[in-house]
Every structure is written in C-alpha cells, then in structure tokens.
Image: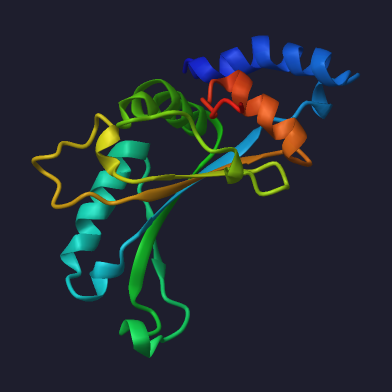
Length: 183
C-alpha cells in the first residue's frame, strides 16, 4: 500500500524544517499529527430518525470510515431529549486515513469555501490541538447537493503531539493549512 502523499511530505520536508526552526536534536521531539476527529451534531434526529442515516452515509462518504453514533448522556427536558437518544455522529481518523482526509481537506475542500480568507487562529486550544468548524458539508466533492436533504455543519479537531500552540502552529502551516494573515 502506498503511503499518503501528505505523510511523505511530512516525513521528508516538515520534520527537517521543524528540526531547524526549533533546534530539536532528535527526530522524536518533532511534533506530529496524532488523530483527526470529525463531529456532526444531529439535533433533528429526535424528531426524525431517518436523518441520522443520511448523516451517517454522508460522513462515511467524506471520511471513508463508518461513523459512531453519539447518544445523550442525560435527559434534558428543555430540548426534549431523553437519555440514550442519538444526538450526533463522530469519526476518529488515525494513520494513513487521517493523512488522506487532511490532504483532501486542505487541497480540495477548503478552497471550495465561499469568501474564504483563511482559518482563524483562535481555533487553537493552548495544548497544541486545532478546532475548525465547517458550515456545510457541500465543500467536499463526495457530497452532491441534489441527494442531500439540507446543509449541515461539522467540527473538525486536529490533535497533535505538540505540547503547546507555538509548536503546533508551524506544524500545521507547513502541512499546508491556510491561516489568516495577521496584519
């Protein structure tokens, strides 16, 4: 099996660049990607359970992996949710599937976002992880507008082994994630 294009780029270019930039002595000190978690909230599944099947099929097409159903931990009467009801789906990608997904996200999906000016720097959590929200799933070419019932957003979390944001930001920039330019 061929290694992912982004993984080869990481091993050949990004590792050397980060070792020079931060004066790392060992290759194992260089931060790397750990996993990518994609979450889709499906609040309308409490009224129509068939919506959950549509979301599962779309997320499986985008990621290449079957999503897990997230269920409510508590009953919340204001939202008419009972304990155990399905309220979302998530996928955790690791290894080559993670690199393939990020490659498609960076090079195909993000350029298709309307009026895109870069991803916000506020998505970092202080521990080297980055969160980004996507307003609609139509930016992925695997999803057709005709077959989908409505636009749904998703949250993508990129988890790295970096200890803090000063190491994670250059890693993600070198991998090709387009951040907003600071003026």
